[in-house]
Image 1 (spheres, rainbow, N blue to C red):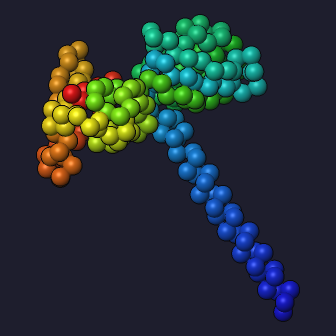
Image 2 (image 1 turned 180 degrees about the vertical axis):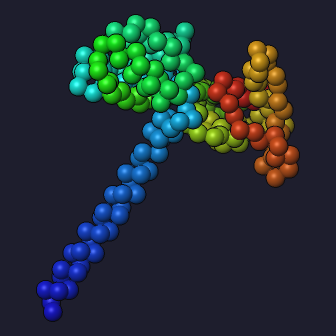
Image 3 (image 1 turned 60 degrees about the vertical axis):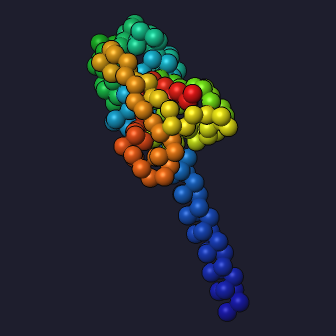
Amino acid sequence: MRIAKEVSSVLLVLITLLLIGSVCQAAGQGQVAEKNDDTYVIGAGDVLSIQVWREPNLSGEFTVRPDGRITFPLLNDIKAQGLTPLQLKKKIEKGLTKYISTPVVTVVVQSANSKNIFILGKVNSPGKYPLTGPTTVLQALAQAGGLAEWAKSDEIVIVRNENGKQIKLEFDYDEVSKGKHLEQNIILKPGDTIVVP
């Protein structure tokens, strides 16, 4: 009877550890999944890990240049900007069929450097911040450590480039934080700049 209790205690501990490990692994893969799903669009500055199965000389890390291209062995310059990892994978596989029968390619975004916002002015930590997922203005201001003591919280402006033109969107921190004018708490886009006077 005592042995049965010890065995069931050990089994319970093992099952608990397995569950905790699964949750931790899933949480750790969250950011990678965001950068490598079918919706992530590759941009200049992104670092890509491209692996060609059984071809170590063709595999490696590639940084997307400002012109949106990478230099890939055998294929020279390839446009990567504007494509998803899956689209780039198919493009490379198609190009490699001239040299390798049935190439198998994997494209993983190692570092998403092209999706940034900028927070300037009277915040506690101004600077460039990566967009790792949908982020509102309030969330971005929190990332920047909140507003500084003398910030004009009712005169915040979001500067955005749309169709080659700069537009300014007003943001009243006091009103939004009280639950009013929530339409001002927009989801930020790459390249947006929040200016806190």
